[in-house]
Image (tube, rainbow, N blue to C red; front, side, top):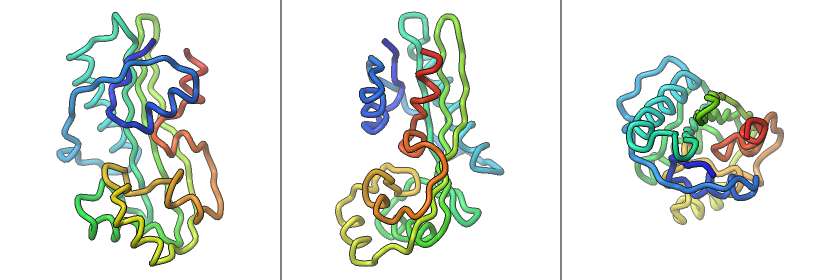
Length: 181
């Protein structure tokens, strides 16, 4: 059993699908103050901040601690979580017809090991249909998602090419995690 220090239902789903038993609880960390020079640097600093906050709150002695964060980048821009529907539209239009990289960092800390992994999955998206984009935006499913992107949802039908793992794009590289469990 591990402690998933994340409120993400998608990360919980990934752990369930990987057969990893967990309890889910976390303390918040404010990512808005992070200034980073690259997507990998940003996601590492965000994950490290979450790790330190959750380590202080829970430790890792009773259950191994698992912390993760994801960032989306396209056209040399770090695409954060959208704050409103107009922001989500702009973020998604940056990805439409372009290569989008989804970078996930995780820190796993147990009594006998500490693992830090940064993985990346790249997608080439075809141009988004504006009517379908409007429906997605109205659904609100983009809320709380890095880059307003759901490769398992709205973006799935627009994928032309993929390089990397879907679990990384969904927020947790369970393939790497399973190797060390």
